Length: 293
Ligand code: ADP
Image 1 (cartoon, rainbow, N blue to C red):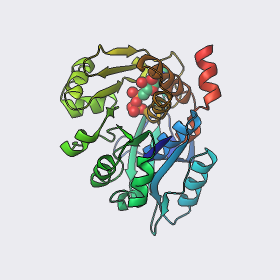
Image 2 (image 1 turned 135 degrees about the horizontal axis):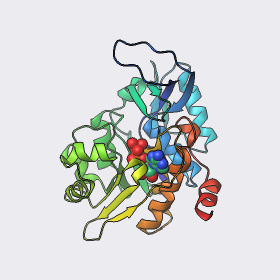
Image 3 (image 1 turned 90 degrees about the horizontal axis):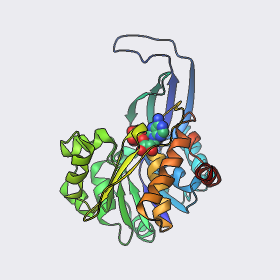
Image 4 (image 1 turned 90 degrees about the vertical axis):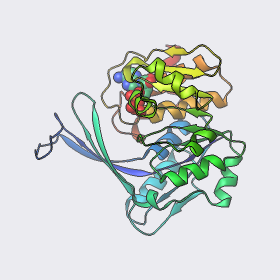
């Protein structure tokens, strides 16, 4: 079983040919509201990839709150620890261009009110195999969840990139930055050097490299490089979240690192071929079929 302690945002997505520069107005091709947020995304990705998942987080009392709760429930995620609090839900304002690139503004809303897991939430997290954390909640809340995770393996996606307190890193078992976040954390642009620097602080790390694949390392072991699958990307929103959710599922099933990375890469490759965040995450049957093809 996997727990996710993190954000739920409604993604407000505008599809454009070319993203506007500051001060410029462009006409978009389409607009959609899609439940997202790194926390909810990872929860949905893990549930679709075949795990039992509980999501701990908060939505507001606006129209977006019930919509996000319903989306998590439909994906099979346990929402009994999802708080509904007065005020706006978190939103992410996303621009997707015709090459599948994206830029994102996050307004935290309800996510910003979370100070840490309650006793009951921490107990629920502690009963799971792994807790997935990201940085769209206040840092104090992320630290509190990491240090109270009990028997759960702590998996951190350090995004959006922020300085990481030592207390947090001390509690992390596996960190999964993309190459930009890895460079921001370590000051090393070269992925192999960044990986070595990360492993000085945490026992295991994966650096995702977009269409170039992913690089895994554990202390005392040779790094493992896994290529991405060659697919036509239409929207890379939540590729990383899909990757982490699926990776946690494969690890939970006891798969060795190279195999777990291949499973995660397949899930992410399927997701970049579809638009949106929660709308783009593949079901277990699709991942297995893709890997068998
Ligand atoms: P993030 O979405 O966090 O920026 P990345 O862009 O590194 O993360 O993507 C995460 C993973 O998704 C990659 O390691 C890769 O497996 C997969 N992926 C991303 N972009 C592509 C692509 N264009 N084609 C195939 N797989 C991709």
